[in-house]
Length: 472
Length: 113
Image (tube, rainbow over all chains, first blue to last red; front, side):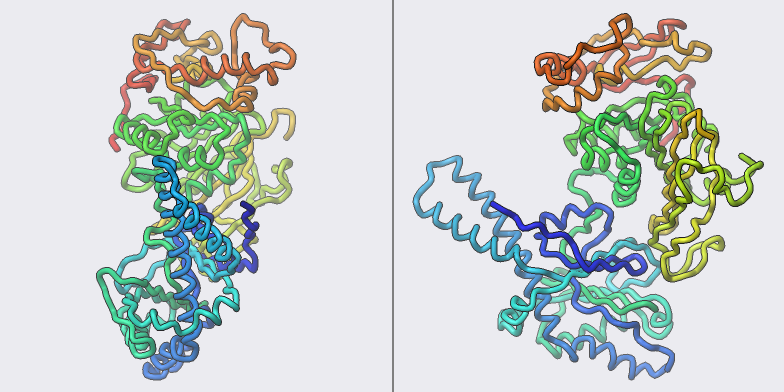
């Protein structure tokens, strides 16, 4: 069976949300690893102008989100329904196939399965609009059902499907719930509850849907800020970030996956996480890049027990070995490890017994020349790495990095409300500067830095490469 | 603990250095766990192994020799030491293996989760 290749196109990235178009089905979409949640886009438009404090006027504008173009609402709902039906059919189909194998097949059964397959082929030709939401922002939530970190993607609809689906009678008995997030200027005038109510009432008036706060058919998600007004439907009940294969998550899986993806894990590599905790990073890495030997180490009995459970639950015990050792006394020969990925513990939850410099020194020792280190660092870690160490290097350390020509990128997801005094409160992603700048550490050369949000705090994914002793 | 992992470990006892390899393994409980055979993976790991007195150059064309790879696969990946000890050959210090996890902490430290 030939599945058409559905590369995402028209990808647009705006402040923690990625909008894209694709015709992939739910199974493919479920595999997105660096996004927190996925939404089907209903509307994306310019932010509401709240400079005039006329609440009534803005209220009307909000209602127009629905009333000006009820078509797009109905279209998106029907696409969403189709997606779920298709997915359910596939599941029934695969269950049916399993059953058929167990007992003798009757003629009727084969006919039914063939028919369902034909329908599926049609559906996969559609294009749909999605929004993926990734970013963490500080906002008020109306019904409080959402995670703080998201990424939004948008996909475009196929027009034929849209025309057909418009105004089907079965859409009148839908129950819904509105979840709203407001930040920026809008939040000063309206609370999330108010917006939720305005939209909810408009929906009831326009389509006759009933509100159900407990177990609605459809969840309507609205995000209003200074950059955009976005409305969408969450595609899955559970966020993408909640992985079926991770029993107990430590670090959030999206960040763990992102760290593994910049680590350049090649087939046959020896990959070490010397402070693995519950093993989240190793799980994400081993799942995506299975052709490597993974080793996790931790000092804590409890964490290792949790990690072992996770490995078992994920079926990844064969790929990941566990050791009870200290990160500053690794029982590994020098230059024996290809990749090190680690979330350096910070915050109130963990007490970091050793300082970050001793940790980096031991990591440097066991790493192969040309090997990669990817760390998740807090601002405090960055500060202690910048102070004192390598003081002979000027603030612009470009000259030292002979391996990577000027490669300090800073990608994204930055909080709209700006998080600390060292971060410029810009709303667009800044590609020029990565704050804070960290100097090389011995033979470890900084390559890239990415700021990520962990919900309440921000952190930095920092990538180093160990230079060969000959190069300087 | 798999034998592949064991091959990467060396003693970190102070002052021991390269004489701390390989750690002497004594197993009191061993399990054989079937693992899916991936010839490419095994072939890639072989050059990484430290095989002691065995000549360091593998036989020509070992990557294509399926029997050889299957044997190595079985030894390196399917043998799990569940209980036993690892001993530093130089200092004599002993580290326990419990439920498949070696405890090689040098000091008595342990952080509570």
